[in-house]
Image (tube, rainbow, N blue to C red; front, side):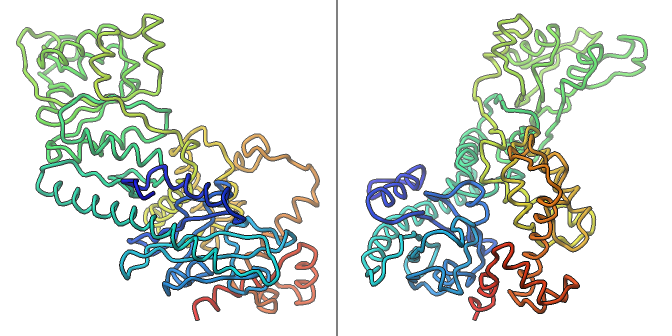
Amino acid sequence: MGQSQSLGDELSQVLRLIVEGSDLRRATLTLLDGSTRELFIEEAMGLSPAERGRGRYKLGEGITGRVVETGQALVVPDIADSPHFLNRTGARGHDGPRTSFVCVPLMIGKEVVGAISADRPFEPHHDLSNDVRLLEIVGSLISQGVALRRETAAVSRALAERNQEPLHEPVTSRVGSLVGRSKPMQRLYELVGQVARANTTVLITGESGTGKELVASAIHDGSERAGRAFIRVNCGALPEGVIDSELFGHEKGAFTGATHQRKGRFEMADGGTLFLDEVGELTPAAQVKLLRVLQERELERVGGNKTVRVDVRLIAATSRNLEELIQSGRFRPDLFYRLNVFPVHMPALRERSTDITLLADHFVDKYNRVHGRTVRRIATSAIDMLMSYHWPGNVRELENCIERSVLLSNDDVIHGHNLPPTLQTDVASGTEFKGKLQDEVDTYERTLLLDALKSTNGNMAAAARILGISERVVGLRIRRFNIDPRRFKQSVRARH
């Protein structure tokens, strides 16, 4: 870390070394989002993607929130005895081995930017001060990387405002309409920043529904052409007989129905950017004409003989493997090499699963505004289902799923039963279906009980009133489902 020039992939290696070189377990780095003032897990060792996704805190909430709020390290000898330990990730079972917890702040000067924490198997009378010291040393090195990242982002913004260099923020959660803070997205943001201010032709690859058009839009918005036209064409949606006319225009009388001269998309995008989505669907004839435009920067309208020069930056996208199409003779290799000057790959959602909760929150906010709803949160059971699903339809499927759930929610919360049936089957979620009615009833009953206890901060009497049952029945259900009401009392105590 002392020789590192950025956080990058070093974080996972650092946390791995902490775990492998000591008796500590589940080393976790949590950072403070400067815009939302919310804490999120940036990197972790010993946590699953679903557990990492649930590890989000507000300032003062739980042990981690208290450490970041106060700037003081905290030691919990036994988490089972601490009313402030939330176990928000769900990684530590109530019946598991006794565990100690150490958490220290990450500081840049006097500013707290996050926290680094780790577990240790409980040992009576063990002195945890050495663990605190170890995490403080490592945290100091990580803080240097965070500080360097901030300085780099500030310089990039200043240079971008003067149109000297592309906007380049090594770590961010949003670029244009793209949302995500995972490592694949950070690499994508870097490529967008590098190519945005050039006139280079870009080829964006990736599965359907990943957001390739958003990448093209971000490149255009970061370029010198940002104030000019951004024309979109879906080549797969154009009938074969009108592709030439749509792309290159036509003269009056060129064919039946051509009652007047019409500019094509290339001329409409003159001075700006033309985005050709699903370029692999172009006909051989259209591929030849597109190649000429790329080589000569000129075209002829259908039915005309006048050469029209155009100044267009071309961004193409495809969900198909163009190299396989070349092998089968359905795509011209010379056109491929002209398009593939600067390749950019849009990762599938399953390749950046840590972005799922961030995207889900983004879409909740979006469709709250669109439909006038007031959904405030996503229940833990729903988060687990979102994180377990394989998302064959990628971000588009997730967006449709969240919009549906926002409309179905009756209590400003998205529950597991609000999600589409595909997320609740054994095939879609990769879980084994028990096939017993009582198991399903118990699962639903436990979810209702957890939500009631959470909303009443662990008050069993208040939870009973919400559920319309007696406090005695609540107590019986708590024992039956092995629920500890104390875990829900911490959110109130932590704020005090």
